[in-house]
Amino acid sequence: MSVDDVPVEETWARLQSDKAAVLIDVRTKAEWTFVGVPDLSAAGRQVVTLEWQSLDGRVDPAFTERLSGYLEHAGKGKDTALFFICRSGARSRAAAEAMAEAGYGSCHNVAEGFEGPPDSNRHRGKVAGWKAAGLPWMQG
Image (cartoon, rainbow, N blue to C red; front, side):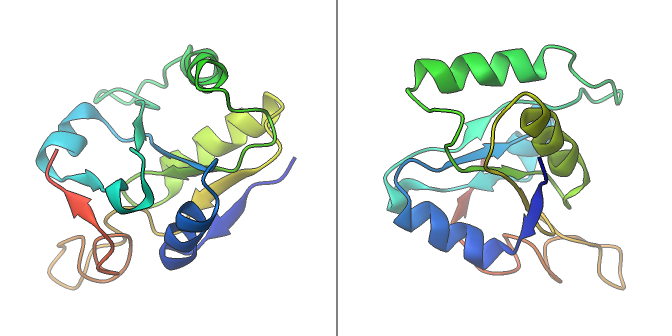
């Protein structure tokens, strides 16, 4: 199964039009708290927050099992559109690939993530990504 990269604006449009679609933020708790999270209230739902890896860089070996359990409990099938987001798109791609390998057939990586790449002053959130696109977000 392949994972595609979806621009943030297209992700937002698909989350608004597909009421079954899920946005999974795989960043760390510290990032959610101090940087913020996408705000999906206008689409009538909430982002799923589940760490792909801890602050020390270790991938959660139970990530796939935990997310699968959540999705099953929420009534989401293996054909549900799943959009994975992180800071810039690397961790979310790995998480999306893991879920695709687990049999989920519609896994998408949110291109450029929540903050995107750093600008010339090494600040994120201004060049590309969810925040730079002006999409709704809130402080965690």
